[in-house]
Length: 80
Ligand SMILES: [Zn+2]
Ligand SMILES: [Zn+2]
Image (cartoon, rainbow, N blue to C red; front, side):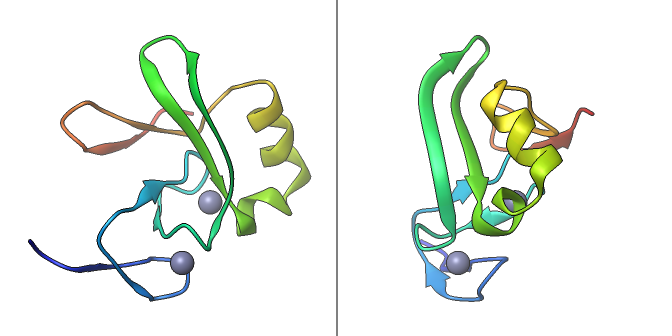
């Protein structure tokens, strides 16, 4: 299994989340908050600590809107 690096802090990680607001693969230390099973067609919503400090992105998160979507095949797509 390939080791990847967190695109926010460069830590080596095996499991990652994708921030729905910058599209980066992030480790659990960089993950600020996440929700599961809340949005149709997406099973997970995640925001990193950087995006959390951005009021407009945080507002999107609260409204369950996303900028980047993760497809079921794992590809990350900008949708907004
Ligand atoms: Zn990280
Ligand atoms: Zn982010």
